Length: 505
Figure 1 (cartoon, helix red, strand yellow):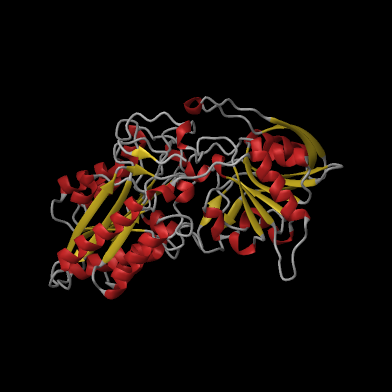
Figure 2: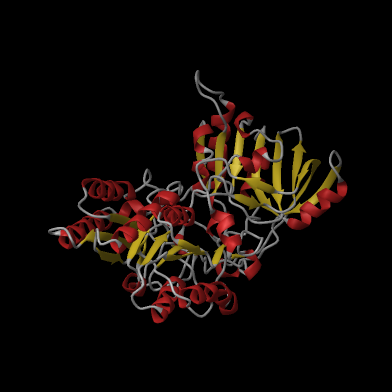
């Protein structure tokens, strides 16, 4: 008899300090969620956990049910009504009967009346089917609740930041679940939570304690001591009781000492995180000094063999963590210091895009660019930048990722235009979009005629994900401490629910 596999994706990284609303249409990155066959078509063949689940189901000859695929850029909590429109199709599919459920979730989703959306999803599925095997793959930035662990059969998560192993994390969870269904393994999960909240700027394996923790995790998997070992360093901008560092290890209870091995690996990973927690603190920088240092690095010229631009990273206004993507502080400092041959991406300002389209390619336009959004949670008002320049390019903003992250997926910038600013102190090209989008792929520039490898300077509104596409071409990288609701300085936020210690430098 053909097995029936339910495969779904519901992902939102909720920044509870963000002023950006999260209506239903924001899922699908501005195109709305996909349901049924459209959900499968949107992700099949991509470098995502959902695609891995689909591939496993096809190999197993299972009937594939994809009730929903919904992913949004990080922003404020979604409403109960929006959440229900995403979850009910999944519930209906499970209610109709299935042999297994495979979930591609985020792990830091908040609803306006629920601080643990993933826990609620799993609890509701368990009410429908108490014993159905459930595999879940989580984002690296997960705030893991006890209820989530109790309701899942298998949990895995990404081991990279930027997240270039999403497919592999889904493949691992899916294979464990299928093997369990065949009686080859008996998954048992051990997990622990530490009351510490790291700065996300210190999450990448090469930047802080995570690297040493992940060495332990990978080695345990490779030796066969455990089936999976996952570090989840939390999402600091979600104010919940579960915000903190988690480790979850899947052991095989069919093996001698399988459960004990899982507990030992879990304890070892948690110990490294606890003992090295000071390494999760981020050292703040002075913006003017950072831009001046970047200017010196760019103007000095490359050494023999050096190629590529100097990257300036505006990490406090990163839409990939819930930022408004229209804070102009770093852009203004770059212009003030006269950096030459700069490309900037992206500034989100749909009104500015409309004005540039109305002006037309090759024509001059004066704008009040960005600064459209107030951020009351951190006491910051929007402040636009008065700027004049020439409209260089206009596009529809339809792109396909070619780099190592989200490879093969289509995405949407909305109508997009490039403003070319030239003056006696420097030349700058600014990519202005209608929709939020983090720049982790070179296509953000190339789709509108800018070749990033040829620029002297590139400014990116990103935090760490830019490294997927841009680190390989960078000559130097300079972090720029601007303003916004993704600030690495956790003292900027007023937490109400967090029970852990904030790691503030």
